[in-house]
Length: 308
Ligand code: ATP
Image 1: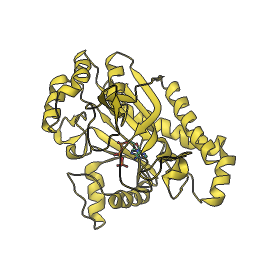
Image 2: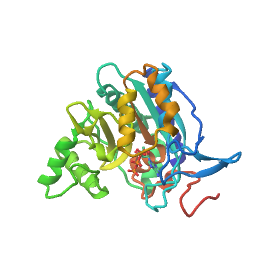
Image 3: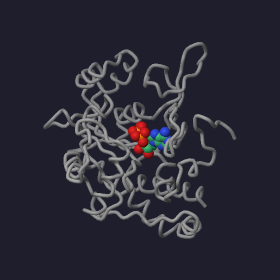
Image 4: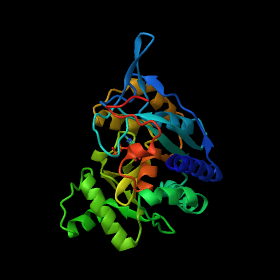
């Protein structure tokens, strides 16, 4: 039943995005060794040079936008060499990714995401009630409560809510898991929503391609989406101006050379754009209130497990 529901989430994701004018793309999972870098990549030999398994389709979906594909999504494997054994991390998971050109404001992407998740939540309960009932016999869970319009909490408001509740979050850093859970409770009390968007993350917590807030560059036009205080999706408006992009790459002390093709793509009059990445198993595990993300994967991959 859990695998049937995993398939349902995928189906509903596709349904909603096709209806919202997106097309499906397929980007390579074998990528040049240096392009994404970092400690969390699996390295492999590629005819005598080093290649990596893609940590996300990020740069490729943006290059699709720069070639005028306008609205794209991808369903595909994502590889993370994370040594941490947690209940919510896998070394290979299924990424549901989307990217879109925007006209006026990245709120347009938040509206698309909200509509898409509403489609998933509503249709899960209506069309897959039988499978849900089977899982809920063993793992109790209630339908996710969501607002009609997107429930958007700005970072500063979130920090104030936490401080008023006696917490001491790092206001220009990232949120700890405990603070995320606490904020989830506070949002549920204040807005009656289990599903919400935390918007305007501090720049220190986000990658180089994230667009700074025009009114204050300590913050970014970026957001995470949560179910009951646990992250299911992360996204942002991206930097489409090559000069600003180069400046941000330098500020994060990253080499420009491995990103040359990507920067060239951004030089081809790329429109302003924004997008998001979602973990399929993460959504299923949190929606169903399972105790471990591994239960939402048919053949989970973690630091101690590569078979069957
Ligand atoms: P987290 O803070 O939970 O480690 P992240 O910030 O590394 O996640 P992103 O790289 O932004 O996450 O990935 C986008 C989405 O992919 C996340 O919101 C989550 O749903 C999912 N995801 C990320 N890492 C994993 C993982 N190791 N296993 C399963 N799903 C993941």
